Image 1 (cartoon, helix red, strand yellow):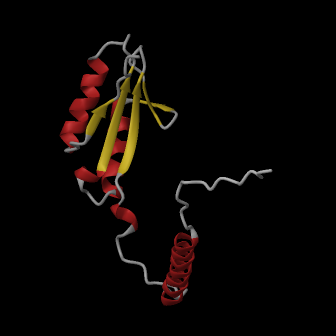
Image 2: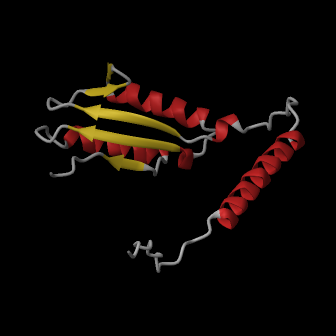
Image 3: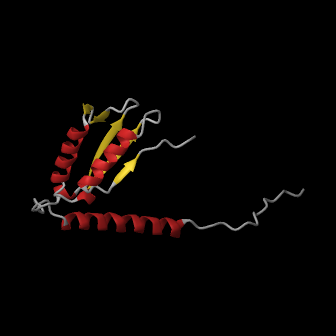
Length: 138
């Protein structure tokens, strides 16, 4: 009587041990490097650079409604009041018009006369970073 022998699989097996060794070595390396970089960065109070806070550009949103009303920061304002607000923003930015961004949001159903007046006022103040908001069609 002949007993059946188990067949040997002819496929090759991949030895995962070197790959796991490399993974653990990389893990240990990155953990060590992270700890060294945190040791180099002591928790000390650093001096503040003068003018670093006022270098940020400011953005002012001007809304023009359908009936020509100008709304800035939730407040209905007249054109001269808008000019004074923009002048204050310009003064807060150190008098540099490139650091004041103005976004005009105008109602599409409204008249463009008020928008033109706002843009002319911005031009007189020297503000050049003016964007008119539009809605992207779907």
